[in-house]
Image 1 (spheres, one colour):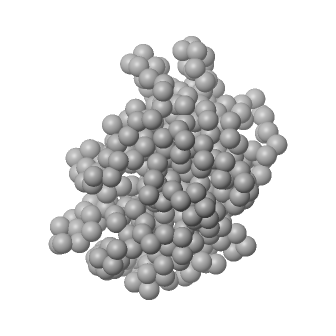
Image 2 (cartoon, rainbow, N blue to C red):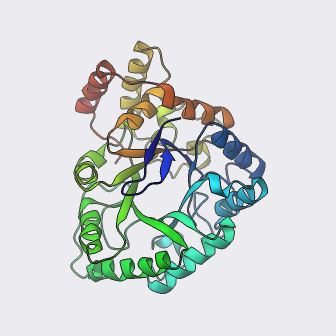
Image 3 (tube, helix red, strand yellow):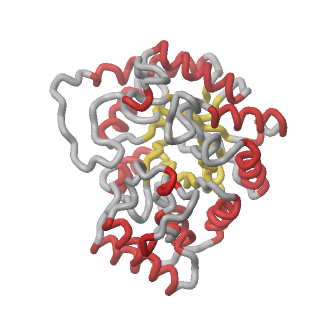
Length: 344
């Protein structure tokens, strides 16, 4: 396993991070524990979760994922071996079963305390805002539509003051963002100069099918020392190649949840066919091509992989041993120039 430091800290995390949003829905407790056992054995010390998980979110399954992780860490006595990241759910129609009060002081304290209880720990290493509270383009929206009545900008400083209180209490160590845009990142960084917590990571989608992070955010990461925690590096499994030629395997994410088709459009499938040809050219799996590309990017601190089956997890973690060379990158860039970012 390879490791990197969470920016501006002495915390060393594995370049592969275990994503857990399938725990408690696609994976039962036994399967989830098998995944965590295997990941830890392979040197993966970075686990990412959220109070929202499992996905799709529902009131019936609220926060089951955190409970599974907490029970496992307690049973195995491995809390000291894990760098643990979780998130507060942002506002939205599909999170109203959690709360409707956004990132208010009460909400943040309530969310942190709830996660600590479920995770059976007295501290969280990295606490993240799951997506912006303000009106902006996230989750597949290419363009930004300005809402003049949105006066949310004054909340940045309030949030940081609350997070400082929680950090000072010892309940969380560091803070990060998720599904954020360059303006939001820079706003938080600007205000952190006033003796307030500094955002050290940003968890956004990044894959061969969605490289929009490179437009703005990657420069922010390199110049401001922020680390990308890349999620959906396989585009919900599309970049494994299992959905090519109209295939829809039983038990697969797109079969179970057809509404989660963000990465499965016509152009995404066309691009995936090109990437499959590249993988065959270099005699590696498409999964390894896709994940090793993400692993290799200089602004990526850790690559969040997830799997519904143990053999998928094994292949995903093994991607750390694949070295992507300049010829592979040139071939990838040719596809990107023909079909740029088909899955925003």
